[in-house]
Image (tube, rainbow, N blue to C red; front, side):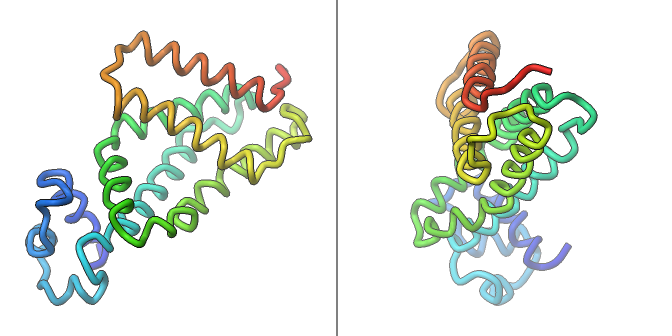
Length: 192
């Protein structure tokens, strides 16, 4: 693991433990096992680590989607797997997602969000293009714009369950079913 990766992982741990406001650079470097001067070679402040944490999270999301989506299954089942994987990531890493939102919102780094999410948007764009090429979804949708809309919708639904509500499993199942039904209609999904 590089020093930068150590800093990012330590920052995640310390932010999770102490929260954003109470975390100091000294806490992060202690957890990373590096000198304080080394921290400043990579990041000018504790909050400047947030975009790197967000990038790390996007890489984790893409890896989870790549591993969790079965390429041999029909597109509609792959779509359901996409929803399931994003819900699972939000459940498992909801505290990191909340930290990222809070940390980036406090800084000038908010404008970097689109660049940080670009690989995620691209993954979803390719997924939608695949559905179009298979003749499973409407040709009239623009995969680039629709990728952003889909990610926003799925993440928002997952965050509603895992970050904002204290919902029961039954509520979560119903929300997922409603979300999938909505996506089927929005994409004009044709059943195989």
